Amino acid sequence: MNTDQTGESATTESPKEHSGGARWLGRLAGLFLLVLALAVGLLAGSFLRFARDVIELVPPRNLAEADGIVVLTGGRQRIERALELLDDGTAERLLISGVNPATTGQQIQTLTDTEPALFECCVDIGHDAIDTIGNANEAASWVQQHGYSDVIVVTSNYHMPRSLIELQRVDDDTNFIPYPVVSTDLSNLQWLQKPAALRMLAAEYVKYLAARYRLAPGAGTRNGLRSSNVENLAKSPANKQSTSGD
Image (cartoon, rainbow, N blue to C red; front, side, top):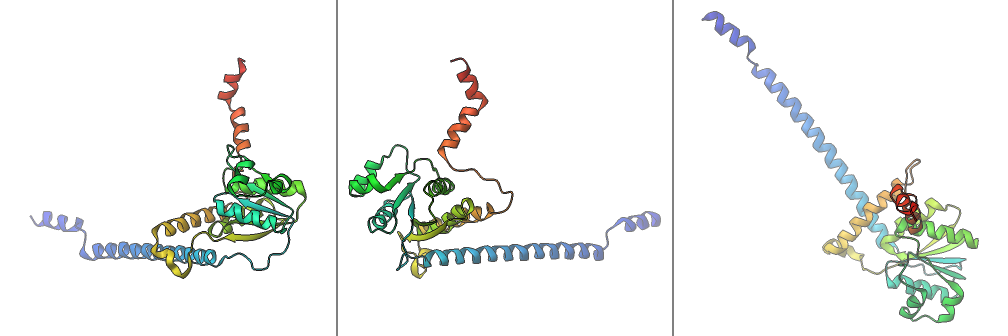
């Protein structure tokens, strides 16, 4: 009996050992929560700074003349403002980037009630870009083609930070001049009380962070152009098999 009791007590975990393990787990959990709270705080602070910078973006009062204008599609107001700048003589030529292939220049001219002569002489329509990355590549090709040095960029204020990053990533020799279009009033922290505005800013912030990541050396990226998608489709093995019998 005594021998059995002694053996049982030797294999039983002592309260002291159990308490030490619980304290270690508690400290580890506390450290994890602290790191998580710091990460969330840093991310929230970064988002608020991004939102503040976007809100402070307004059209410049004194806009110097430039060689060309690039407007990134996404809203009629952007195109109308870019056409006004062109008509005022701010630049000699305008590229409307990212236009749906089914939309013609004449349709845009009619929709914006612009003089046909202005479109015929000075407006180029870009149908190749499918997103902001494509806008940058399409614009860079257009800038290089015309040999421009100073180019005004017209897009919405919330879209401007990411657009400039993508443009400068593919063309760091050109001076891109931001001309933000304010389509939504985000002043006085009103966007915090508007779920739609909050979602829009949050989504744009995530895309902005992705654009920042693409600046890192070795970060691969697609070019966002329809023509490359068609080219890749033509080179795919399935497509080659389907066309080999023609």
